[in-house]
Image (cartoon, rainbow, N blue to C red; front, side, top):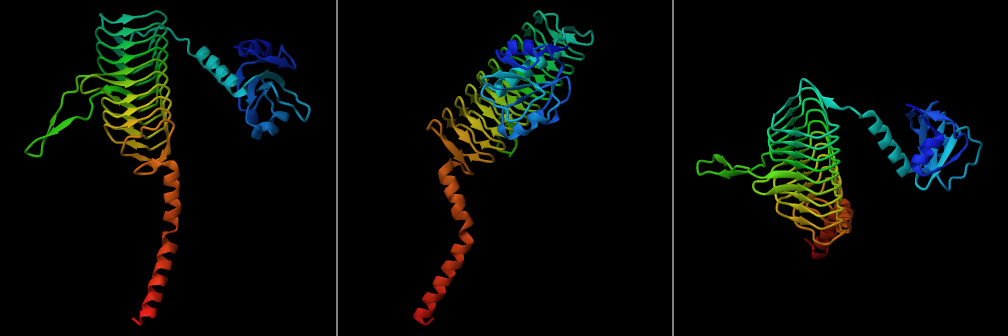
Length: 345
C-alpha cells in the first residue's frame, strides 16, 4: 500500500515541504534510506545523513533548518520522534488485519468470542472464557477456563494463559510468556520435605500492559497478582505471586520481583534487578541495573542502586572509596611501619 506525503502529513498533523504527491510504501532508517521509503530525523547526530539519504520523505522537527540542498520531501511536525512512532503504529496495524478462526483451533462451546477476532492454528480456548472484540491470538497459544480478554489485545505465538486470568484492553503479550502459573509456595516439613501450598488466586493485567517474550507472571496464593494499566515488562522477567506493579512502571530484562512486593507507579527499573519479597517501592523510583533491593524505599522519585541498594549518590560515593582501597591499605601499612620505627620495634 502506498501513501503520499500529503496523506502522511495529514495523519501526523504536519506540513509538507517539497513534493506533496511523492509516494512511499515502506519505512527506513535515515542512514539506510532507499527510494520509496519514509524516514525521520530527531537526533541531531544523524543530521549529516539527511543530505544524502535516498528516502523520498523525511519527517523532521518544525525548527529544522537545512544547511545544504535536499532531495527528500520534508514533513515538518512538532516532535519528529513521536510522530514517527505514530507512523510505525499505523504501519504495524495495517499489517495485522487478520480475522477469522482457524479450523485447527480448539474453542470450547461455552467460550464467548467477540467481533473481528483472529484465532490462529492450534490455539486452545477453555470453558467460559470471554474474548473481546478485535483480539488477535496467534498460533499455539493456550488460554484456560474462566479467563477474560479485553478488546484490541494481541497475544503472540505460544503464550500460555492459565485459568481465571483477567487481561484488559489493548494489551500485548509476546511469544512464550506465561500468565497465571502457580506462585512459588511450599511449606517446609519436619522430614525436610516441602508441601505445596495451593495457589488459588489469579493474575490481573489492566489496560495497555505489554509483556515481553518468555516473561512469567505468577498467580496469587489468594487474591490477585496485579499489573496496573500502562505497565511495560521486557523479556525474561519473573513476577512472583501477589506482586502489585503500579501504573506506567517499566521494568527491563532479567529482573525479578519476589512475592507480595508492591512497586509504585511511574517507576523505572533497569536490567537484572532483584527485589526481595514483602517490600514497598514508592512512586517514581528509578533503579540502576544489577541492583539488589533488600528493603522498602518510601521516598518518591528516589534514585537507587547497588547491592544491597542505597540512595544512588551514596552508592556512587561507596564505589569511589572502593577504588581507593588498595592505595589506602598501602598508606596504612606505611604509617604502621613508621610507627614501629619510632617505637624502636
